[in-house]
Length: 144
Image 1: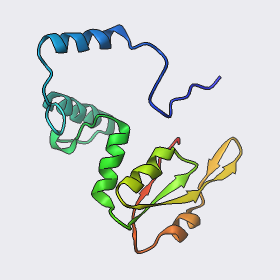
Image 2: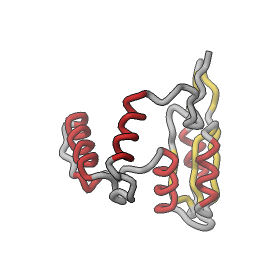
Image 3: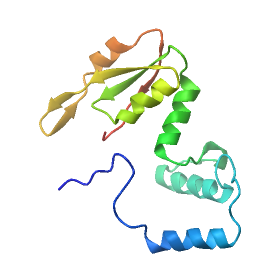
Image 4: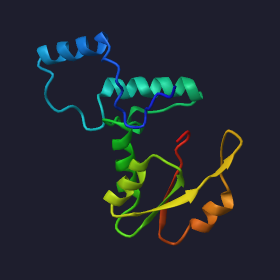
């Protein structure tokens, strides 16, 4: 069967190592706001990891840790688009993306993918045709 992962709400219990870490944090008084860009040690670890992965040097300042993927998407849209701007996205897509564009006051513009074989194909000419002077971003989420 299919495991639905689109809402970020699984039906499996939280693993004990996560629950235990949360309990230790609460007991230690770690209940206040954290760093806005993320805990420095985590951002340093991300810089090291991606440096190894891409054989390129990254600085901690290049990373922002968000509370979720949706939060990251909303921050990106808010930074790039505003009232009346357009954000192109490939469809079918996760419905929250179009909603996030709307929250920012932007107009979500769907470019429909074509069914092909056991997946989808993207007609680049359709994307080009959707671009207008109001286009501020193109969102590609794969797999969607």
